[in-house]
Image (cartoon, rainbow, N blue to C red; front, top):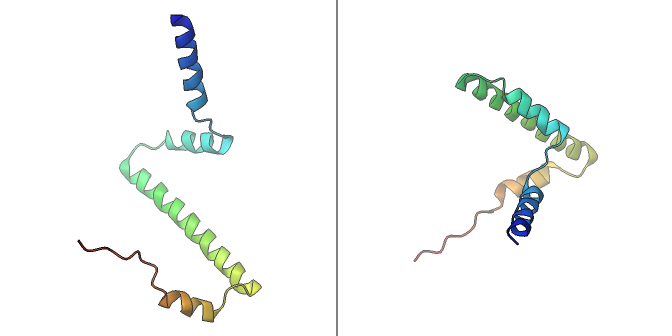
Length: 88
């Protein structure tokens, strides 16, 4: 009886574990080489720059395809998207 419970517990643990793909494993190997807080900060900045560039490229593509325009830009700037707060 005890062995069955333990076996089920191990099976649940195996199902819950995260399986990483090759890209994620590569990033972990890269992170293992970082030695200082400065290196972590530099890598964080590189990653931020990468995503900023991808966002810019995406917006450029929308603009060139006509899916985005100056008019939509101005509409978005004037929208109020914040969640209203309820004062008690």
